[in-house]
Length: 173
Image (tube, rainbow, N blue to C red; front, side, top):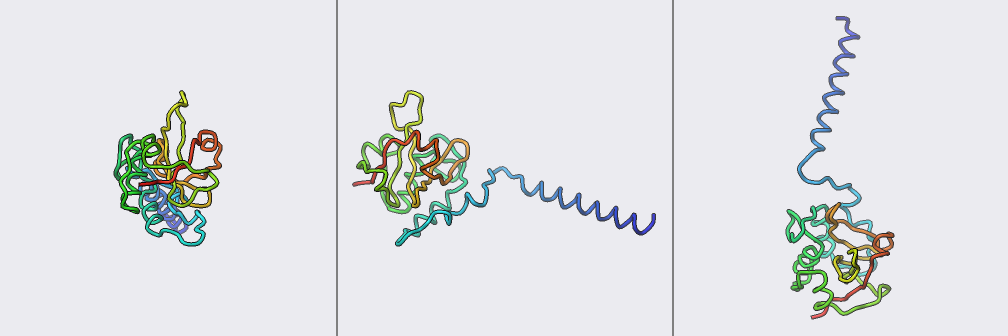
């Protein structure tokens, strides 16, 4: 075999090997999260921020959704809020989004949201009861657990969340 053909053949083999390795290593049992979804740097941090809150949020990003879940193996929206509040603020909240709003919060105006406040949504077809909650960060962003993407950061002005927004609440004890 001429030297040029052998080099071409070896180079082709190396390219195929590298491509195969990259495909194999990119697959895993955990859901891959785009790099920009992992970082809360995209949330503008004005003034004095709670570093423990942002570190806790970063630790939860990418966790898959699990109805009734309250761990890094899987978490639903209220489970996420309950765990963040327990970890960051040392406060125990009720477990359902409706009870958190009803028993742990006072209603505030959306324009008055501050870091650590909660945002509530009614997304059900009957539209009668709160069934989703997220924790407000800053810069119109909130962290929550979604059935499709797990724990993510979303902008409140996204059409879906703007449409189903119900109330904002500040936790009281």
